[in-house]
Image 1 (cartoon, rainbow, N blue to C red):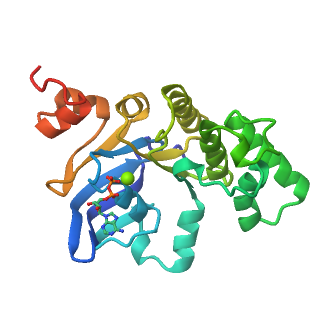
Image 2: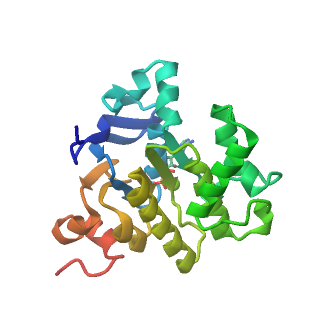
Length: 256
Ligand SMILES: Nc1ncnc2c1ncn2[C@@H]1O[C@H](COP(=O)(O)OP(=O)(O)O)[C@@H](O)[C@H]1O
Ligand SMILES: [Mg+2]
């Protein structure tokens, strides 16, 4: 049976997040649809990274639900949680590679952790993932021997090693020059199109938000909630909220 084009992959319901007694976000309600490139945007300190941490099982919400295919992650048992997490890949800032291991060994880690594959098969899979991110031939290099942009792409190869259904990125273009940032955006689009992966991106880079985002949620530090959700392009055209307009026009004129 063909899948509905708007099948929710993650449903966030009445979510609130807190550190101790300090509530930093509340009343969050949004869906991430299968195949979306979903942007979590907002100014610095608005809670983007914290929201992402709660989506990937690193930060328990104060209240509310995060449902994966209908199953509330934070009420699920450890076995169910592990299955959900095995289906997701995360690209941490800077690529977060092990400096004492080669690029190939870094990308092989998740394969070795979860599967018992022959060496030759691991080598093939690693080379395939490296070729997808434009790093063929860099198998035996160490992270310190390649550029920052290449390290991010190596981190991406590792994040897609297990063919995850969902990929998470926190500020993927942070620290990259515009050319490498664009290259990473193109890769994100290619992975979404080629593999059908649902991709969740924390970002405040406008160029990237408009280039890749199909849906989004806009977080606000002052009101400690989401001011809007939907396609970033539509938000730019339709939102009357001065904070959203200022953000999406880089502080430009809010009259139009
Ligand atoms: N470990 C922590 N303990 C206490 N407060 C935190 C912690 N991490 C983040 N915060 C606070 O939560 C708010 C949101 O932070 P964060 O999610 O990092 O925002 P963003 O990623 O949008 O910049 C900020 O006010 C920040 O100071
Ligand atoms: Mg952050």
